[in-house]
Image 1: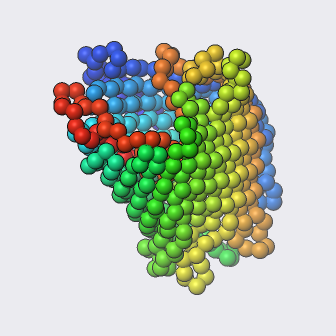
Image 2: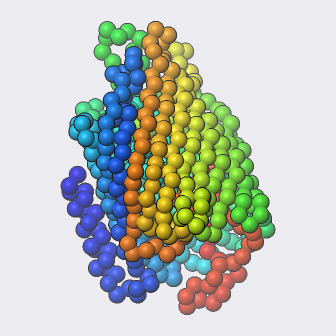
Length: 469
């Protein structure tokens, strides 16, 4: 992976040299750093007996430096970032890992009524430290098989938005992603998704209708073998998800908003001939967003989504609470974190050859950090005490086998900083995205207002629409 780091560094150099004539206010380069030390009671995310060998405790230290380069003009906004992270365990050096994450995103105003967004990212990491490399307010809950498997993954996304009037907007978004575990028989996952949506803005509300079609290919999927004495077999799996959702977002005052999505999803097995399975889908969320960056969200979703770690499309109920709010402004104390619970079932072929749901996985994740920061708006320098609890239980496929349960507790003391100081406030939590979203979740639109005219153009009756994701 050294070559990957060299490419990322070279890309930064090229970006800076290419824009050497840019004005100071248009180009910025920030260095970011996070370092921590702590303890965990499950180094390799091992399953508890009798399903697994049981957990081992150890101390660990993490170091994560990174660079963020941004370049903006009246028509464009681009961001290029690279982060290197390493996690070192004191007694179990075989579980130590490092990761590389490089990402680029750009938004281009192509006309007074249209805009284009592009993005690409690539990462390499290890499963047992995957969640620790995320911040408490952005940690995602997704079931995995545990262990210390290394992986690489990449994605590319494109979006186009057209705003024919101040109150109407049309959007299109496409995403391609690949996940590849570094194993002798790699269980790769490829996915392609395309979404079309239409939005109508009111004074305090936004109504939307979104249609999404996603194709997922799973490679080298282990086939369930009822006879433990015979060798396991592997097969490929191709599945299609078609989702239609109606959405309504409503402002509840200056800083609060709500959202309700209702629709349906049809899952189709393309390779196995098992037919289709239809289920309802939906989202309900209550959000809080302050101008200084404080934010909170309580959300419930029921959806069908691919799980690349388990090579499954899962029907899951998810309840999530995220928050980043001050505790005592005079002491420069704030708290940020997330708590999630998920009940998931994979879509697979049953004994009759029909598409059905498999064994249930129940997962709980709690991640909370107490931060001290001299800068109250944006924590460019912060000391944090962080606690993370992960608990996952998966039902056995046969009655004589035990359920698989993975539990891990981690306590970290960390320091983070950025130089030079980042002046623009922003949310420190990851909001739940609407189905087929054409913009960030929880955006409050109190009035339909045309965008400002572009440099060198006459004012238009309608501005550029939101960037499609």
